[in-house]
Image 1 (tube, one colour):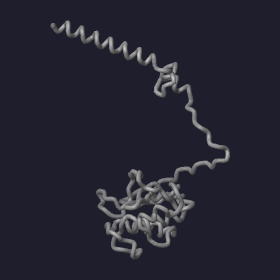
Image 2: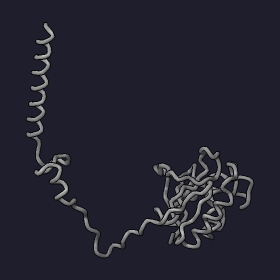
Image 3: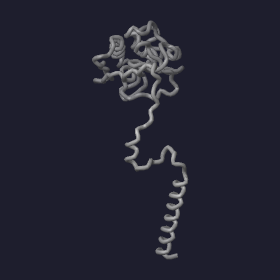
Length: 200
């Protein structure tokens, strides 16, 4: 077969496939979620999305909390943070360079190092939100269910960390080492129970 004949056969096959695809799309119902409405892409802008309305007596969702910032590994609280949250951040900053020590922070508040739940407990205790240290398992039922506006503790049977004013407080290792540290990036919360101190 000559090159010219091969190219002609290839062009004919491509044309046939294009016609088949066009006929297949035309045969699909117009209500497909991905179908473009009449008027092309600009037609999408003219059709506002349907948003289900909340029941009239439903409370409005809380506004997102202002985010703390990191300066040389230390969290700086936003200006309008509640006093208890400011104390939580200050407490966490006091131990932010300590090493990871399994069981650290459970026998005494001021310890040579901290494990995950010990570091979270220490920070919460600084804000007077926790009376005694908790292991990660009991943190799964501490406080109120779900995420809080300012503080959310994520816990499962083997690990615990917190998101405080938009920063992650965790003992997971990074370039700064393993131990209690602030992180700007969030962790995947799948497999964790989210809890928060009531009102925060």
